[in-house]
Image 1 (cartoon, rainbow, N blue to C red):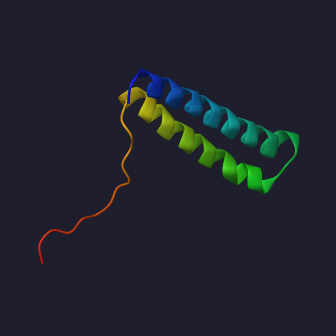
Image 2: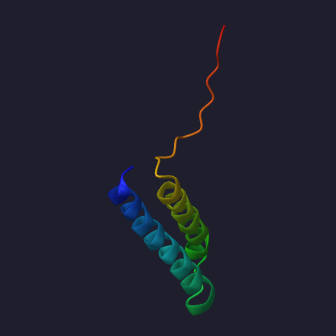
Image 3: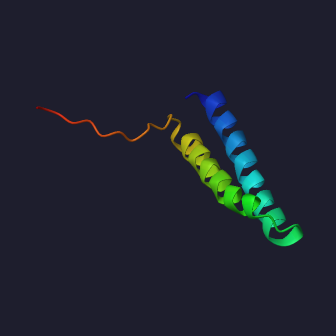
Length: 70
């Protein structure tokens, strides 16, 4: 990724992490909602993936197992 892609990845990371923290805050303290408590950590994890993209400057690959040979 170029510098523009890394900046965009950083912005996306910020948005996802903020959304995850907001979901946890609302779900735990302001208005107890189990769905928000479940979705908050998922948003935080997705934000962390975007942080990794912004830091490395490369897209992440889905881990797959490839069998070689017969």
